[in-house]
Amino acid sequence: MPTENSPADDVSLDEIRRIFDDLPDADKSAEAAALAHQSELTKPAGALGRLEEIAIWMAAWQGKTKPQLDRPMIAVFAGNHGVANRGVSAFPIAVTNQMVRNFIDGGGAINQIAQIADAELRVYEMALEEPTADFVDGRALDDEDCARAMAYGMMAIEERLDLVCLGEMGIGNTTSAAAICHALYGGTASDWTGPGTGVSGSALAAKTEVVAAAVARHKDCQGDPLAILGAVGGHEIAAIAGAILACRIARIPVLLDGYVVGAAAAVLHALEPRALDHCMAAHCSAEPAHRNLLERIGKAPLLDLGMRLGEGSGAGVAISLVRAAVACHNDMATFQTAGVSGGGSGS
Image 1 (cartoon, one colour):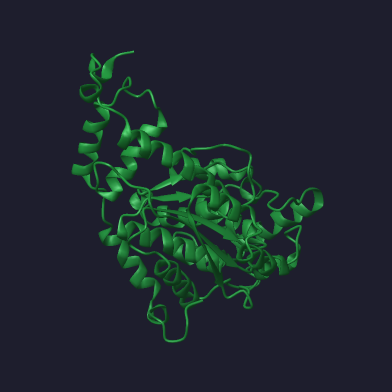
Image 2 (spheres, helix red, strand yellow):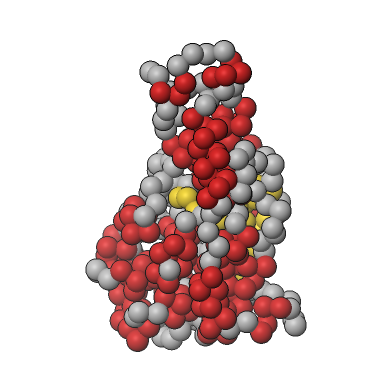
């Protein structure tokens, strides 16, 4: 969490709500120029499919006809959840701390993916020795803690970044994500609760009952997404929401990882549907409710590889797609420079 007397100490949820009143938009002139440039590249119009969409998205949010990808960052936020003591995960809460140490030592999947993607990897420990309260019994976070966690996530973002990939680590956090989604979107707890680390049978049924009980317990939060985030969220989920918001302010494109990151994004989307315009969904995870969540926030995933690891792993893999999109957009010859006839409409 933020250090003593850091700028995050004085922030409030009301201040965070006010940010939504003046969210910056993409650079429409850069977007138009990028589209014009793309129409002159030596290919039929639309032939590169979603790679073309990615390139224009990068250009629009970076404000450049030719976007760059010199400094991508993968940010992994780690937090512990009191609800994990109810047996909602296949692993004990101590694994969160152990996995953070594994990331620091370079042994995680995300370390290998970051290296291949040539991306900076940063791991942010969110009060690991102070798990959130068990949200079946009370609020996971009070308003002050939720606001501080969001501010911490905002402070993690630097303006010079070209792309931010967001990931998480936290035993029990798919239970928290399920509770957020159930509270935001309704339905039944089973619609939003999945195996997470691999629970099944009676353990999955018990996890689903925990989600249902939590949402019923905090029904007074209905209609207030930030109240829902504090009631059933976590330090790392709130920080991810803050990081997404900071990227929007700085006009930095974002790749969202899996279900937990998606739940953090859903809180912002519920507050303001435009709040995720600078984001793309890197992949659809194997967590069953993730696909439904992506539909709710209007994001078609770039990849669908059956991954369910978290850690920002799916977002990290998707960096290669963004690199391909940017390289084709920036470095392909135009019809004029290549001496090719027919313009961009041929087949």
